[in-house]
Length: 100
Image 1 (cartoon, rainbow, N blue to C red):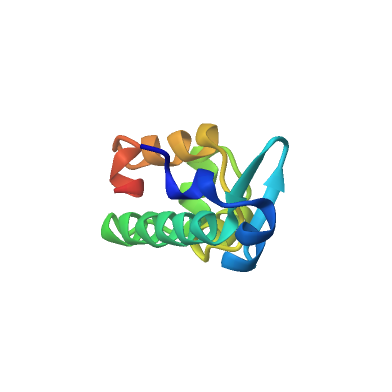
Image 2 (cartoon, helix red, strand yellow):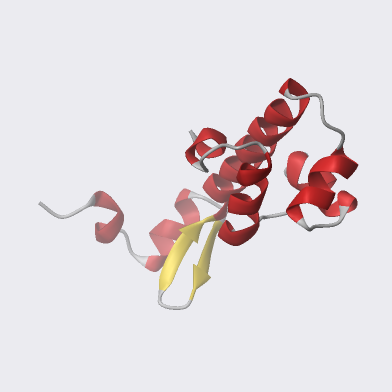
C-alpha cells in the first residue's frame, strides 16, 4: 500500500499545508517540528521547576547560555540532540522524559 503522502504531487502538498517546506530531496512539515520544540521546552521547564532550579543554574551545568535556555523553554529556539541530552543529564533524566 502506498502512503497517501507519497501519492500527492508537489502542488497538492503545497496546497495541503502552507507550513510544508522543501529540504533537500524531501518535504518537511515545519508545523509539526514547531509543535515538538514547544512541547520539549514546556517539559524542560516543568522538570526545572520541579527540582527548583533557576535557568542560570541549569544553563551553567549544561554549558549553555541562560538566554538560550530561556528561548528553548519558550519554544522559540530549536535545540540539538547534543544539547537536549546535556540538559536531560542536568536533571539526571533520560532524554525521553522531555520528549514523551
